[in-house]
Image 1 (spheres, rainbow, N blue to C red):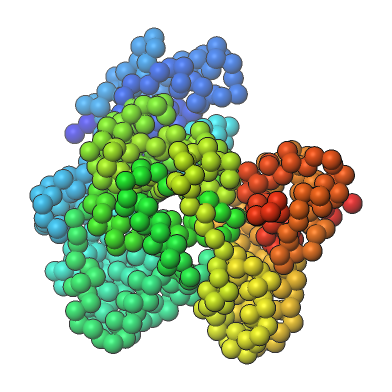
Image 2 (tube, one colour):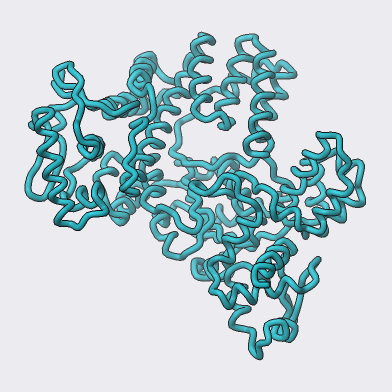
Length: 602
């Protein structure tokens, strides 16, 4: 047994010769944790900059030396490797709870891997691992003066939470098959408690309750899932959850065996399965055919809010795709300012790259992943690309992989696609599909006001984002028993939509979770320079539904003899669409946004 033990689950601490050691400096604890999880020796320059970003390199090195000396006064320093350029941990001299946890989980994954279910020995390893991971990584510890260290800490926390979730899920299924349902439910509910909005966890709890004869509890679990999704995400359960609920209601005895049987584990990082997708069957089929064809890259481009992320999520869960890419799916959503190292690290972690943490460069991680994927058949999905260079780290698939990219920006689509044929323009919904989407969201409103509902979807020009927000607002009014006729009119005029809360899947990590539609649209215009932004705002003066105009009209509005340079910019940014005959179109929702911007100039 090692004399020094480092505990990083929960409140971080050290234990030497069975006695708790309190490091006098917070940076000493931060340094210990960082080195404990590093696979290789770390460069002193890198560590000094990481922990003391506000200091000059000279002073940061002095602070590092002082911290190392302080550690040696609290506990013998023979467990540390220190030379003039590098730092590390002598792993044979120290026990680390995170390392022990990961080792046990890894053993369970590789042991008797040809078996579909856990064996008894693997289950024992996972149970031991869970006793170590009793709390989140470094609970309550913060190093606010170093944003990079905070980011590293957050990445470790999320990575370890995924590993813990994996262990809980596998044990829930394992004990379910042994018909030890109390134990199975215990693990499944712990998995659910980690993320109460995670539908697969709700599904497993429902399955276990139903299989144990507790049908009422299974139904209550479904109802709880519906209420949580509605309250927190303003969305509906996925088709899989609804199908499971219907099977439970009909007391289909075969469903548990079919639903919980473990299949060969794939390597995947998946988006949530879309809860509601209407009128996209043809688009999904066309994109699927492209992916299954010989072209290695497909770029999906369209208006903000047209449903690019939704259709990519549907593609990730498509059974045909699942069969064609037996090694799995890797997905990422980037946005305007992504953390490329963090996001690519998630892919590397999913692929089981053991030496990933020892690589401190983006190029190094890319090289490892490329080697891993060289002979794999995987689908790579990169959603919401704003800059060409942001895609490069994720273009790591071998010749049998396929890459699908989405962007709202026409110029990015053209820059990424080898030919125009490789770009798929995702259209708005047809009137029939748009009305059906509205009906699915607020059936009572559409039933009571059929003509007004049809006019509403036409006013919103078939944009799924606008229709979903409108439908949820109408449904809320309808639940309260209020008349919705006036609200339909207000939504048709559009102003009320701008201040409505955006669906959760449109909000990026790290941004305000209460983002409005106006805030989402603002992301598209913030990238414009001041002149082009003002000219975009002036287009709000045109009558919408639909807002179409020619070069002469635009030039008059802008008082500009040659409006083409700015028009090219707006087209490239996905804010304006070219039509035939030298005319251009702007979606009604963007017209409303332009008007709101114009108010700020007055």
